[in-house]
Image 1 (cartoon, rainbow, N blue to C red):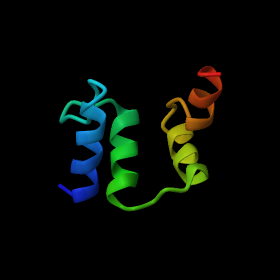
Image 2 (tube, one colour):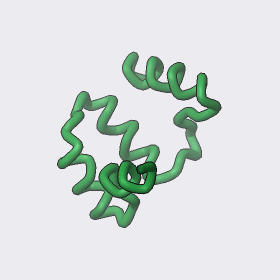
Image 3 (cartoon, rainbow, N blue to C red):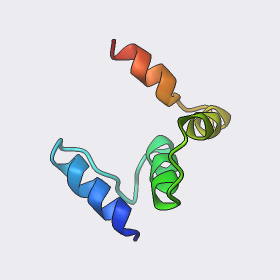
Length: 64
């Protein structure tokens, strides 16, 4: 497991949330991009959309 994923899991666990082996497709996609050091929201949203998952843009708008 990549150090960035471990650090992300530590951060998320502070909020009672973390990536796990049985993670959702959304979490798996996000974990993949973190481990590959790909942080472009446009690229991530495109893949999320292709897998019929909520996009980061959609989630951000729901929180407003």
